[in-house]
Length: 114
Ligand SMILES: [Zn+2]
Image (cartoon, rainbow, N blue to C red):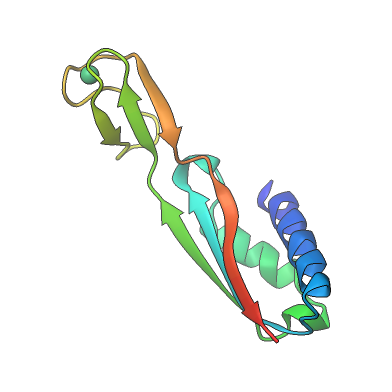
């Protein structure tokens, strides 16, 4: 499962940032995860539990916000959210020339610690 790899690099980023900011213990982490990033929040939480065992992450709470996948129709310009991950049909004109504009993101929104 690729959530382990993703979480590993997220934790590396946090370790580096905490070091630069002289933070010894992180209390809260907020992640934004696009539904189209294919990263499952449950698996990310599991990976966090497994990998975040050092002092820095002791007692830290991981909060994950899921973002809908947003598309645009190239035929009529309609913006729409994907209800179903694989149903790329425009609800306005039933066109299939749709493009994903957001939903692939996965980033650290913020973190807090001292
Ligand atoms: Zn359309």
